[in-house]
Image (cartoon, rainbow, N blue to C red; front, side, top):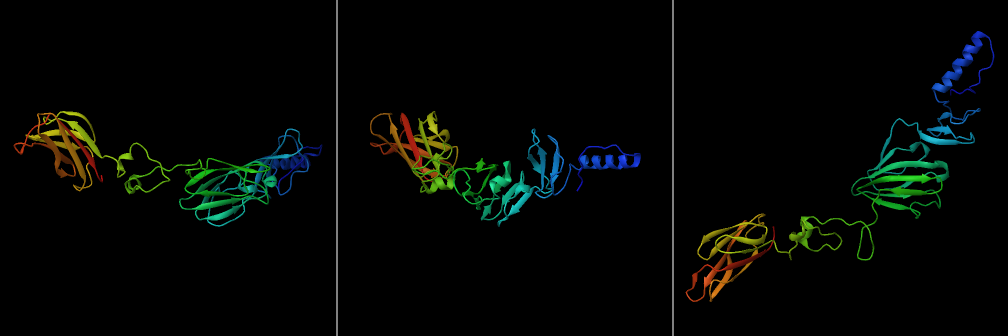
Length: 299
C-alpha cells in the first residue's frame, strides 16, 4: 500500500524529505491499496488492489469511476464456470466447452464494464446474469459457436454486441447459413440459403446447355466452352466444368436443315457430349440448321 494525502506540511529537512518521498511514491504507484485513499481529489487515480481495477475520481470528487483492469493476463480459456467479476473488465473469454457462465451483479460491475467473448465451434455458452437481471431482455442468453462478440454492462443490465441471432426459419427472421456444394447436391436441406454460384449443383438444375450449329458456332450457352464440328451431323459440346462422370442425362434436338431431321445426344463423356442429327429418310447423319442441348446430372 502506498497512499498519501498529497499535502506537504512544514517540517525540518529530513522529515520534509521523507514526507515528500512518500507523496511521490503514492503518485508513482497510483495510490495503490486495498482501501480507497482517505484524502481524495477530482480526477486522481487509485489502483484498487481488492477489485483489481484502476479507478479515477470523478469531476465532483464524489465517487470513483472504473477505467481499466489491473490484471496481467487478459485471456480466459475455460470450459466450466468461474463467475465473471470486476477484475475481468476488458478481458477476452474463450469458451472451449459448453457450460453456463454466471456474472457478478450489474451494480457491482458498474457502468462500462465489458468483456470480449469467443465461443468455439460446436460449443454453446449460456450467459446467466445475477438474480433477475437480464441480458438482451431475457434472463439468459445461449451463444452457439462459432461466434464472437462483446458483453456490456450499464450498471443495471447486460447487452451483447456482435453475436448472431437465432437461425432463420419459415416463420422467424434470423441468421441464414449458405448451402455448400454437397448440401445442394443432396437437395434436402430446408434451412440453408442458395446462392447463384452454387444453384447449379441442385439435382433439378441444368448443368449445361447450348444453342449451336454443326459448324461449331456457339450462339448461346451455359457451362459450354466451345463446340467442335466432329463430322457430318455431329457437333461436340465441350464443357467448361466437367461432370463427375459420364453417367448423366443429355438431351438434344434439332431445328432446320430440311424435313425429316431429328436430333439426339450421344458420346457422353465427363467433359463433353455430342449433339447428333439424322435424316429420317436415309437413316444417315446429316447437318441440321440448329442444335439444342441440355445436361442434367452430378458435377
